[in-house]
Image 1 (cartoon, rainbow over the protein chains, first blue to last red):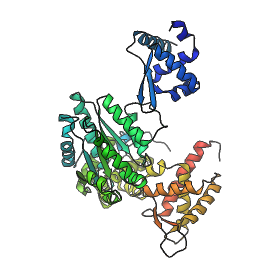
Image 2 (tube, one colour):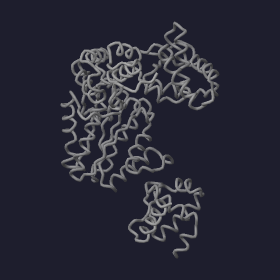
Image 3 (cartoon, helix red, strand yellow):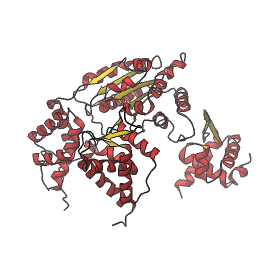
Image 4 (cartoon, each protein chain N blue to C red):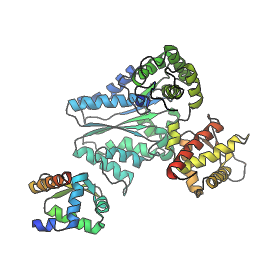
Length: 88
Length: 401
């Protein structure tokens, strides 16, 4: 996924910010915090997962998402957001 | 009047949730607990354990378990074992297995979703988490009465048998149950009872001299030097001893006596402060218990206490309790809750030991529940509730007169 596709979407950036702040969350809670609906959140998360930036773990019916720290780009974006948030 | 000086050095040390660094007069029981769980340090994953701790109010059940938890978690960490000690109070969890398991899971995933699945799913999830993190769990279920009263045998059966489906997998889930009255175990089915009753640690009531040692320890931590004399301490220990060796009662008495000394501007806690405090502290029902009730539960209880205050009767029928509650609701300008909800309140209050319930006897037409108030004078309870409710009212409506 080209980088502009990630950063051009407010929703995706919001989701990434939430995951930096809370570390791991389920879709409904991410949706609630991001002010998006479930389907949109799910689509964004899928896109981010396909890009290798986030990953999920399944507990029965529940999927918990978190940043993929094994991915170098994922790590860098996380750092960028952390830096951005602390130097407001 | 506000005084700058206080007899307290650190009153948090008298908090109900504080775990003191030294556990007095429970060394043997602590060693026993350590023996039961030796495998968790030496051969983790090879077996699991179930232990039952019984004993009266204020005999140190919770503090014993928490002490053990701190020690074993520290030792496990030293050896690189991911052992987790999670202490859950059933009363706070309203006797729900779901909430108990949720507390355990939140220990591993603090933002785990709070609803949307069953207790069974949650139990499976917990085991999955333990497997994935190569972790071991000692789950402590405090005030087991509430769980048995609400869920019967079922929840405990599930908890004690979860390992049996996983014979070849590492054994990760151990259980400590804390119970005040062993008679509650009679409500369990035979197999659950037998799995629980294998290892029992029973705590006897503290004697006066033991209570004095315990209180002395707390005085050193919480009070300034020389503010409580030995004779005052002995007096408190004796009072606590006469309440069935209840150390918690003694500690609460200490705190309240200290507060009275502060309020009177005294530099030392006098026996008179203790006497005043003793009138205020109910041995059976703690302020924290009343505090933990919801607003309408308090209103309902207030209705009951008012009935008993003005009546010679020993019992109150469910219908009359509802009528009394309706009057209180009117007074507090609250919309009254329905019968089913009130029925739940009755069950909860009875599980907490504040009220006692009995079914109407055979031979009478229909069936109703009779409510009685054991132990605490209705007027005292009413006073406490009114005080509690007025602060709440003021807080929620700061402009109210």
